[in-house]
Length: 249
Length: 232
Image (cartoon, rainbow over all chains, first blue to last red; front, side):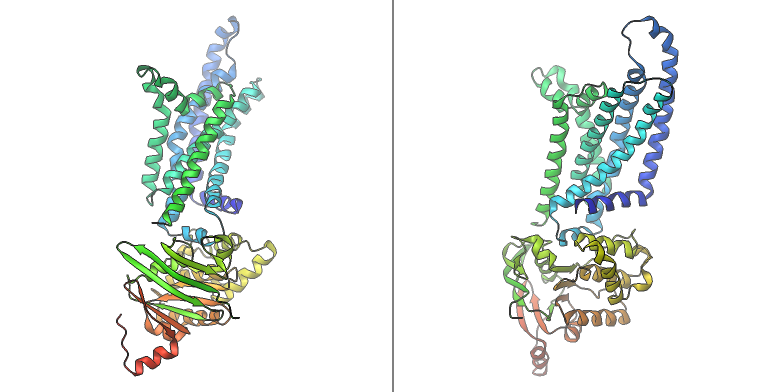
């Protein structure tokens, strides 16, 4: 049942121009940056040759590229998640799902899985650029895998947050803007850390950026994975509870 | 069949400052008209019976399954057309109905035949390829009814199925409802008395949330001859 809903979600995304345009814009902008980073690497290469223990092509070209990609996607993902539940509520189509013999959790998981499938398509297309480096050099495969998984987890947690905020309103614009606000807040939450003393470690742990940065550098820690999984589970549970609660109002 | 297909016991639900109360049961092959003025609690009661809203008090059971305790078993026996047909405007009629068939767990082998059957019943054979958003209101309403009966449920709930239709469409939809009622239990919510008189076996009248009349359609018609007035 989850799969039936997820499949319709992906189908609906690609029926509308939005998904195609997001993929095209991301690919063009990041392709250009990839080229610029690569150009930069060629300029630096003679100096790097003279040093010992230098950063490789992955560190100089790919890690900064994916940092930028993550920030752009922080603005783009709310546009993908805003419609998932808000649109169904506005068009009163949610009662089709509720009247069918399906649990609320299956509805929410189906919606989430649909978004994850889109994320896999998006990130896989972006990863084609680093993979193209294999034509001329040998990038660090383990690091690329860590970057790929890091991007998937990061965007999936964006999707879970977006899904929850989309369940709170009928208005897609409100869903998108509030999602963007929450994501940006989670991104910058550790900026305050240095002046609050003890709070620093808590705020740093809450920050999405910190966990993502480690994975981009190839550090694959179970505490980072746990952070993302907790975030995703938490917001999915909140979404299910929200939909259940609306039946009581 | 002696056992009631739909059993609604002391159901009540608060909406704004009002309370909608219902208490009735429905046997197989019966068409029940749920009649009342706008704002009288009709559009609160049908979502509660179909499990879209939770009741404040009381119980609803569909074919012996409680809608709160065993929602999946109960909903499997139920087809529901809400006040606004829950159709995806960007999907074609065929795509939409296939999706509904999947949601209702119709086995892959029987989906095509179920699709053909409801399209035949609801007069949708000629518009299968068209996008729902481009169809007229009447056709969208038919797609909504098709969605409610695609899994061949023993209980069908239709909330104001003839609103916004032209007289010819209204007649067709009423005939469809009558034909549904021959093998199923149908609950028809409406504010049009003549609709109840032409299609229903039994009528419930609600006003300001209270159930004020519950009798067979014959006695309603006889009541009229004796100038029994029901304030609507």
